[in-house]
Amino acid sequence: MSDIANSAAQASRNSSAGDIVIIGAGLAGLFTALKLAPLPVTVIAAAPLGKGASSAWAQGGIAAAVGQGDSAEAHCRDTIEAGAGIVDETIATLTAHEAPARIADLLRYGVPFDRDLEGHYLLSREAAHSAKRIVRVAGDGAGRAIMQALIASVRAAPSIRVLEGYEAHDLTLDNHGAVNGVCLTANQAAKDNAPPPGIDKRFHLAAHSIVLATGGIGYLYGVTTNPPYARGDALAMAARAGATIADAEFVQFHPTAIDAGLDPAPLATEALRGEGAVLINNDGVRFLRGQHEDAELGPRDIVARGVFREIQAGRGAFLDCRDAIGAAFAEHYPTVYQRCKDANIDPVTQPIPVAPAEHYHMGGIATDAHGRASIAGLWACGEVTSTGLHGANRLASNSLLEAVVFGARVAEDIEKTFTNQNTPRAELTPLADATRLPADQRTDAIAELRRAMQDHVGVERADEGLRTALAAIVRIDAMAGDDIELVNMTLAARFITVAALLRNESRGGHYRVDHPEPDPAQASRSFMTLGQLNAATS
Ligand code: SIN
Image 1 (tube, protein in one colour):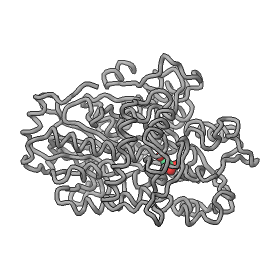
Image 2 (tube, protein in one colour):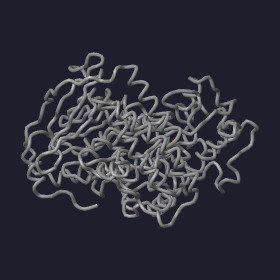
Image 3 (cartoon, rainbow, N blue to C red):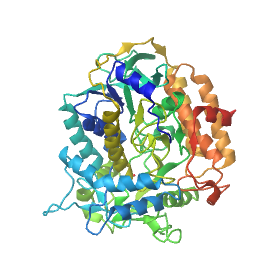
């Protein structure tokens, strides 16, 4: 990607009002805010801190080569191997090498990583890692513990203002095409501006630099491990502002979401399989044997497809932890244990029913090694981006790592490019209220969109189904009117679906039953602007 920080836009950024605005309050957003301190920063959070972000739900932990005998080179090799031929090797190398320093930062922010009596990290193993490499907290509580520590540090930082209860839906641009603000919608969590039912109360916030850190797109799917705020708004608004979207077709499905009819679906962490839990069907057969030499610890896309097909064939899929973990379950995996208990499953004595669920988007806003998007004034980090680290298939626990590595890089870059630190802090400026679609119409439209994505843009895809999904998306978009949340959802869904239609091969998380093999001629990342998307859709 070219260097987008042209001097005109830079001058505009340095003279305009407003501070650095970070949209999203998960790990990527909060870590970036802390790294930017003492520069004044406003963090926009859709929900009260700690409540709306998928980071807090992460069970596994953070991948980092900090164990004896492990190395950044081995971590990098595993990342490239998992990514199925299209990982950006420069990005993978820098990420693996910077991992130990970012773990040290998190320790300084108070994250209580599991360690033995001599202070060595206790590490878990996850699929497709060649070593025990996952730094964890309290067994399966990494996400929650990391977020608690960061939230405490953010609350204590005088330079960080947090606006809770606002969802971003549009970016505004100056005359040079640089981002200079964001349009926000207040939701019920907005203390001073909670809207009446059916009305969107909207505001503008000026900013000289914007960091998008809003997470993924999971809620576009009927079955997901992500919270409802993960609906692709940032991807859509960045694209509308002119940013390039990369690798949108690559969606990762976690093979072992607990199949208890819950939305979002609770996760049964891959670390369980790392400790020896196996996948069986109704007949007790380990169906992944024969599909990959590492069976349950094979690449996530292969395991997810194996589980998907077993369920489709009517044989069911279960994660059997009885021998490998047994009576230690509650102590070693308290989060999964509680989720099972909530669903009336006793994982000590019963196999856990599982199904694949949308878990992670490898695609997103294309960013460079500094976290810059392709328009001036805009940075992004975390799942909302496509840095090239994950290629077609993310290596487990590389996502929290990417969030902190690029959070630090974004902060460093903004510090370098922004010289005028005395601009006045902007306040919310009211915009005209907007009306949402009537509640029942809206619920039906979102349900239809999620069904179309689940049925046709999921674990297995084919040309005909993708076209069916695209027709549904276009239909829903046509009735969305002024309902910007729905407009953003349909735009994000359209990027994913069209990119999946254009990639006539199978690679990593993108599996086309009508093109089941990888095609060496297509072994490269995909990049698309809104103009190109519209041209491909018309
Ligand atoms: C898990 O704990 O299985 C999820 C880890 C990840 O998705 O990185």
